[in-house]
Amino acid sequence: MTDLNTTRAILSDLIAFDTTSILPNRHCIDYLAAKLEDAGARVEIFGDETGKKANLWATIGPEGDGGIVLSGHTDVVPVADQDWTSDPFELVERDGKLFGRGTCDMKAFIAAAVAMAPEFAKHATARPVHFAFTYDEETGCLGGQALVEVLRERGLRPSIGIVGEPTEMRIIEGHKGCYEYTTHFHGSEGHGSAPDLGVNAVEYAVRFISKLLELKDALKSKAPEDSRFDPPWTTINTGSLIGGVAHNVIPGKATVQWEMRPVQVSDADFVKGELATHVEHLNQQMKAVHPDAGVHTHTIAEVVGLEPMTENAARDLITELTGANGCEVVPFGTEAGLFQSIGMDVVVCGPGSIAQAHKPDEYISLDQLDQCITMLKRLCSRLSTPRP
Image (cartoon, one colour):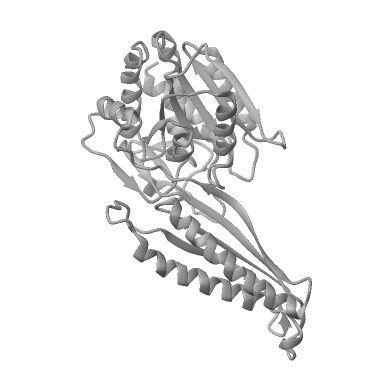
C-alpha cells in the first residue's frame, strides 16, 4: 500500500469519529494511540477532568531535548444546519478531492503524520519526533493549553514545532492571538412601564458594547508600523448579545460574547485595563439601584499569537523540506503560539485551504495531501542528523 493510500485509509477512520467539540474525543485518541504504539512510539494520554476528552503525546526516537513536534487538533466544528451533499462523517472521494468534516481542518495532517510513523521509527536515531494531538482547539485551544503546561512542568524541551493547520503547504511564521470572553450582566427585572425601578441588563450590555466599539476604533492607531497582518491592528469583534424575555419586561439578564485578536500583548493589556475601569463604573450604577446587580466577565481562552522571529529553525527546516519561497502571516489563530511560549521555534504548515474549513462539503485535495506526505518523507533524513 502506498503512503497516500495508507494516509487516506487512516483519514477515513478519523473522519468516521464524530469529534465535534461538544462531544468526547477519547475514542479518536485511543485509535491514534494504538496506531502509534504499533509503530513503536512511546505513548501517553492525558485526560481532562471529565475523562471524556484527552490529549495524546507520543515519541519515536531517542529520549532528550531537541525533538520535532508534529501537532494537530482532533476536534471539529459542528455540521448542524449545514447543507452537505454527502454524510459529513464518511470520507467520500470526488474529482480528486476527499470530502468530510475535518478533512482539511485538520485530520488530514494527523493522518499523514501517523501514516509516516513507521518510517520515522526507522530514521529517528539522532533526534526524536513527537506527536501532539489535542482536544477543544476550536473552543479556545483548551487541550493545547493543558498539554503545553504538562510539557512545561516536565521540563521537556523539543526544539521545533510544526502545526499542520491548513495553509496549502505555505509556511506561516506568525499569527495574531485569540482572546475570547463572555461578559454577564445581572440586573433586576420589573414592569416595562417603570424602567427606573429596575436594572435593565440589556441596556448595560449595550453600554459595554459601546465601549468595545470605542476601543475597536482606538486600536487602529496602535498598529505597529511594521505590522504584516491584514488588518495590521488588533481587532475586536462582538459576536452576540443575548438578553430579555418580552417587550414589556425589564430584562434581568444579558450576555455579550466577544473576542479580540491582539497583534501585540500590550494591546490586550490596554483593552483589559480600559474595560476594567468602565465595568467598575457600570457596577456602581447598577448596584445603586439594586445591590445584587452587576457585571462579570468569564474568560473562555487567552491564546497567545505566534510571533514572527528573526531566527526560526522551524521556518528554516520547512523551507528546506518544501522548497517554499518566503513565509507569511495570517489573521486566524492556532496552537502554535502556545508551543512558542515554552521556547520552541514554530511554524504553521499543513495541507488544505483555510477557505474550506468550517464549511459544508469541507474537503482536501489529493494533491495537497500528497505534498504533505512528501514533506514528512523528507523530514526522515533530519531525524538521523544531530541538531547543529
